[in-house]
Length: 284
Image (tube, rainbow, N blue to C red; front, side, top):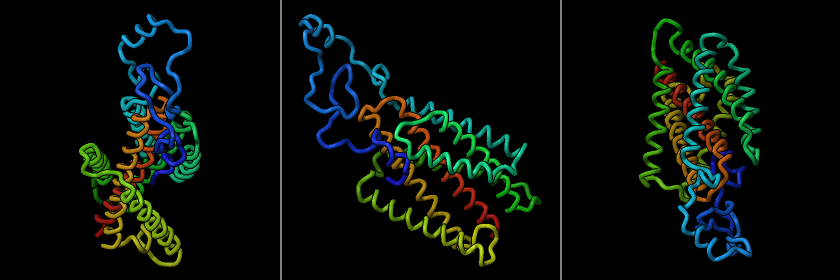
């Protein structure tokens, strides 16, 4: 998978060989070996009849991950991100480098944790809010030099949610499927983009640029930006597939925090790429 959040968590990986999620009305732990008895020894026939006659337990009843859990936690983190970003924009936009560094460190810590930590995920979201609030204002000022009032940030926000909706539609409709070929293509493309970004960063110390790096100016910058947005959208589809596997395999409900964190990571990247693309386009 492209997102390290899913790679480090066994809960969202492919089912291990020799394991399965059983159709037990009372649920079994995710990944439990098949062939294990579902009932305790000594149960009477009447007790068993009552158990199997009872309503089937839902994933919520058995403490399993549900889509509602993921939606609620992702929505809460997004709301927190927006509030912190808005506060930073108006109060202390100069703190964005601190938010960037803290967010990077916490992002790596959370990405490689086997079990989610809600406190660390919330802290990451706050740090990213500080970063996005300040960098968004910096992009707007750098693009228009304070002489024009352009809704570049609003356009980036709307573009992010529109891309998210399009990726979700493509995934739910089955028009785009996460196949081994799709996964390999995305991995190669992201490695290539990372190498390009590092080269652009290094060259920015030796070549003049307009704030985006010498390889991200002009029409070349727009073309690269469109490619990056496409990569982020493909990563969203990978995220949806990982969450679906987690729900289907009946992973514990606590991993809704991991799912929400993974989506926030991709959405932040997508927003930044759209914001940079709009800034480059408006300077042409």
